[in-house]
Length: 272
Image 1 (cartoon, rainbow, N blue to C red):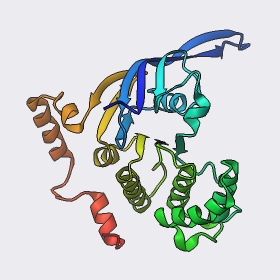
Image 2: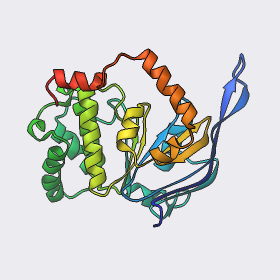
Image 3: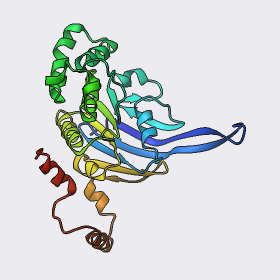
Image 4: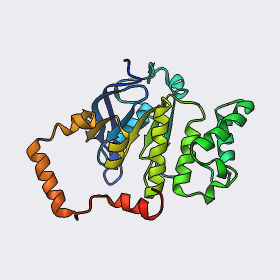
């Protein structure tokens, strides 16, 4: 199977001004020799600590930033020469509440962005109610976004990202700042999109979220690839002795509850 995202020896550096008068420049290597592939219909996780190069990589793949070196193909298109063709096949969602107009209703936000995509009005009238239903906002489409919770705003951003019917969706820490209910609704929506054949590249700091959603995971640090594979393949990198030590440490630190705090929270608030 041909990959829908192909990254080979990706490198990106920045020149940062420093010194008392900001005349000196130092070189910062954000991404160093990064290579991986993503396949159609896959949820691919890109994990790493702050400053690991995750967001830089997402910006390069979504044509917001050119690499310093390396080869990148998105849906068969070259990142250097076919960026316009790539943009018709992708969309992206950042964590937080950007890319929305709070004084407009949810529906009006989608009509506004649909106009930017130059979608025919006849197509918009059919598509927008369907997208609002898909993300669970069908009954609040005429409410102003300023009245929405963070989770509702994030689901509306997903509806916005689906307007151009992308093949690939980039999610850069989409659940940041969400409460457990909002995060659960978001995860369920991501699963639904993958079932519909969308390819999703996800960055997150929440390991449980990555475990639940991702078909394969790449872990990077200081811009370099540490490992890439399924959860089982990555788990095999830890020896049985190391696993036993980890479990012992967890047993000492945790109570004897056989369910997680998130499980209890969702039960108490009536969402499970």
